[in-house]
Image 1 (cartoon, rainbow, N blue to C red):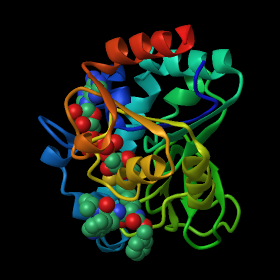
Image 2: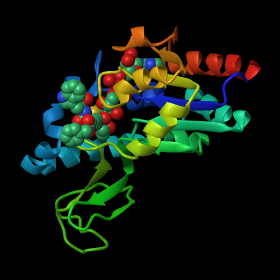
Image 3: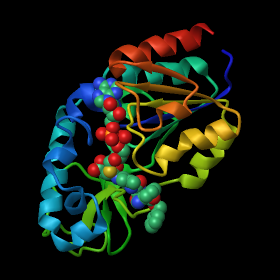
Image 4: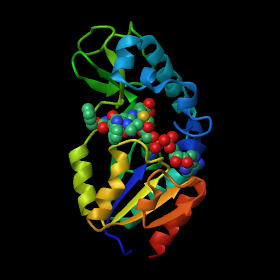
Length: 233
Ligand code: BJW
């Protein structure tokens, strides 16, 4: 194995073949929902009912979703490599964990958790949320929201992610359009510190020219094939 410190960034394209859909592009979530209304703190303040309906629908999809061959290949890679592999996902589903990935950061939060905007508690949550749901800790209703990162909010664990990007010798981006920052800037940071950079995506992303190597096709085909190549050394 020529690489010792690896960061893998994943996006919605990785989970597309598990039935969770993507945000942008043909028939993406943003074709059907206004992101200002359902993915900003201002949208939540204006119309929490609409926003809860959006995330309750997606929480329902999660109950049916299973990890696909690409999630499984990435988990297998982490285990087989045995060293320093950090997966940073923009996805709020739990499919990396379900496949067995252990070193994982959910930089945009987790749909399987709720956050109380009043007392700051984050806790596992699998049920629908509504304005009448009370926080189990402070007991006030109307403050629980999905524990996810909306536009204008700070993504999670950025210090740890930046440190890993500065130190890695391989950066792999899987199934992301490269349109949302700060994740879209990771390839430039890793490359500037000398990492080899690889894009695995259905088609060239916004930042495709920044990658040294690329393989295009469905994640369930391209990811297992790339992982096999890496493990063969
Ligand atoms: C397949 C496939 C298959 C399909 N196989 N591949 C101007 C310049 C720079 C930055 C900004 C700016 N104006 C505003 C900003 C900041 C803003 C931003 O980036 N905006 C852009 C739109 C320009 N970013 C933020 O606000 C972030 N916070 C931040 O910057 O904090 C600092 C700060 C704080 C306060 C004040 C000021 C600064 C937060 C971003 C939060 C994003 N949140 C969402 C929702 C999360 C919860 C939820 O899931 O609902 O995160 S939006 C959505 O986009 C979601 C995703 O994680 C994220 C990225 O999407 P992703 O994963 O790339 O999906 P797609 O659909 O875009 O792409 C899928 C790809 O897969 C495609 O390429 C397909 O081809 C491919 N594909 N099928 C393989 N089978």
